[in-house]
Each structure stands twice: as C-alpha cells, then as structure tokens.
View 1 (cartoon, one colour):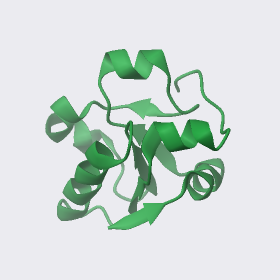
View 2 (cartoon, one colour):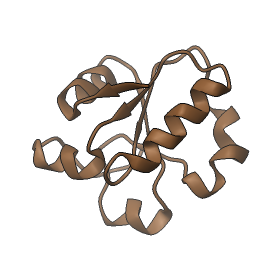
View 3 (cartoon, helix red, strand yellow):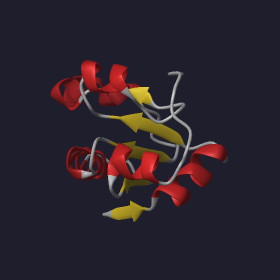
Amino acid sequence: MNELTPQQAYERVQAGALLVDVRENEEYADVHARGARLMPLSTFQQTYTDLPKDAEIVLICRSGARSGRATEFLASQGYGNVSNLTGGTLAWMDAGLPTGDAQ
C-alpha cells in the first residue's frame, strides 16, 4: 500500500488528486482537511464507485487506520493510483496544513 506524509498528500491534492475522508459525519464536521470529500467507511463499499478510476486518490481518516483499509479495498477493486495519508487528520493538523470547508 502506498503511504504519503501529510506534506506529500497536500502537494498531490494541490496538483489535482482527490482527497477522500472516510471518517463519519460527526468527525468530519468537527475538523477535516480542507478540500476533503466525505465518504464514510461505514458506507464506503456502497459509494466507492462514485470515485473515478482514472484519478489519483488520497484517503484520510483520523489516524490512518480506516483510510488504510479503504486504500486496500480500492486497490482490490482495480483503482491503481490510491494512497493512504499516514497519521491521518491528526498528522495533517500537526503539520499545520489547512482545515475547513468541504468541497
């Protein structure tokens, strides 16, 4: 599984990668990486087909565990350019990267 640091993930998102947050609604509403699209892991297997297979996708959660599972799942479904953000939203915030509005 491909792992990215928060800074690497931020650079990829700035270059056009999709940032997908797999936490639940309440967690996302509390704080999220700016630009992250919410797709809760609890319904991910029903909604993942909304993600384009030809896009680079970076998955994020609170600490990296749930997004790691989602990354492995997408790879098993034929998504070739997926990465897990190591340390999740906690590491994103610790790195001083922007939080805020959903896209």
